[in-house]
Length: 104
Image (cartoon, rainbow, N blue to C red):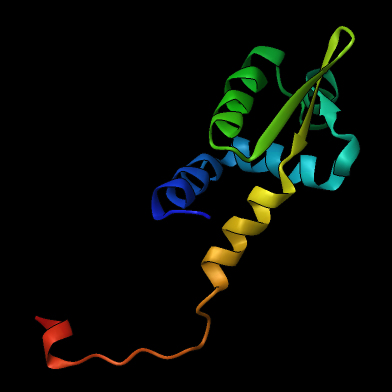
């Protein structure tokens, strides 16, 4: 179950242009994921810059890292992604009724 705090943490991680680009690239890569070198080639970024941003995405629970031999493969945690999107859309179009007490 996602809490407001965990969703806010996920959205804060995605609220940076570079991290959003990394995340979208990993979404396109699918379950196979990409290593840091491959991400760097696609986005024309240095490995040190990517490592910093990937750590933020991992800490937010949006990206999973797995060692495969000498490489670390990065992939989206699709459950976390769906949970975040579901949280944002779960009450779509249900309406809002404000009472006098709500406004106070």
